[in-house]
Image (cartoon, rainbow, N blue to C red; front, side, top):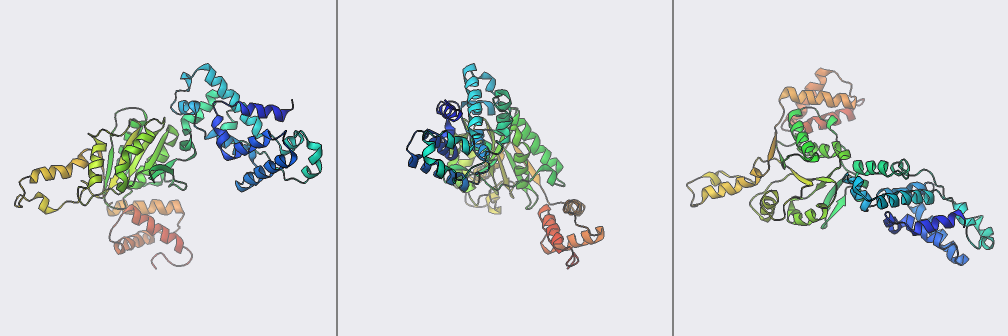
Length: 420
C-alpha cells in the first residue's frame, strides 16, 4: 500500500475531527483520493474540480493551511471540552483518537499533487495529460494546528485561549435573522487607545474580570453624554479579554424579544459572552422594555451563567421621562406606581457607570494624546486653540469631538494650517 492510499484510509477513519470532511476543501480532497481506482475521466474530473475549488478559495499555493484551518475551527467533543478548560477530564481513548486525527490531518495536508497523480491506479493511461495538469503547493499548515501536532495538551491550550468552532474563527457577532452572525470587520479598539475616563473603564474591566473568573459580577449600564466612549469601552473589553475566552454578541434593541432564542444558542457553549445592547432607550414602556426587564431579573428565560448584559444609553433611567410623570396633579391615582415602573429597568442593572463630558482641561489632554498617537506635528498653542474652535462649532467637548478634530487636522497637514 502506497502512502497516498494509506492516508486515504486514515481520513476514512477520522473520528473526533470527522466534521472536517463536511468542509469544502477537505471534502473535495477526500473525494479525489477515493477516486484513485476509478475510471480516468472520473478521476480527472475530480482533480479539476478540486483545483478549481482551491483556486477560488485562494489556497492553491497553501493547501496545508486551508486543510488544517478547517480542523482548527472544527467543533467537536475535544475542542468544546478544551475551550472550557476541561480537556483533562476526557477519557484516554478520546485523547488518543484526537492525537491520531491530528497526525492524519497534517499528513493529508502535506500531500503533493505529484504524489496523488502517481498514486492513481491507471496513471500510465493519463501520464501525458497529467504532465500538463496544474499543481498545487502545500505551503505551511495553520500555525495553531501545526505547532501542536499530535500534542493534545498543547492543542487544548490553543482552544482554551481561542474558543472553538465559529467562536474560534471570529471574535465579534451580531444577532440577525434569528441567528448569531459573525462580524467580519469588527472594531479593534483597545484599552490603550483611550485617554481619560480611567476610573469608569477600570470599573467595567474589574466587573468583566470577575465574570471571567467565576466571581460575583453584575449586568452593566454605561450611561451619560454622547461621544464619551461608552460603546468603545464595551468593545475594548471584548478585545482585551478575548484570550480569556470572552466573546461579544450585539443584540439590536428592537430584537430583544428574541433574547430566549439567543440564550438557547449560547448557554451550552464553553466560552463566556457579553451581550451588547447599544444606545438603549425607550420612548415608552413597550414590549421590548418588558422583555429586557424579565431578562435582567425575574423572567424564566433569564440570562445564562456564561453571559453578561452590557448596555449603553444616553439616559440614566433609559426611558424618556416627562415632568408630567412626576406630577401628582394629573388625573392618575397610581402616579407613584408609574414612576416605579419607569425606574425599574435601570434599577435591574447591578452596575451603572456614568460618563460625563470632559472639562476643558481634560478635553485638551485627550486632544494632545490623540495628536501624538497620530503624529500630528503642530505647536501646542495651535493645537489647543484649534480644538476649542472645533468643539465650539460642534456644540460641546467630548472624546468623539477630539477624535474628529485630530482626524481633520491630520488630513490638513501640509495643505493648510489647522485653523483653516
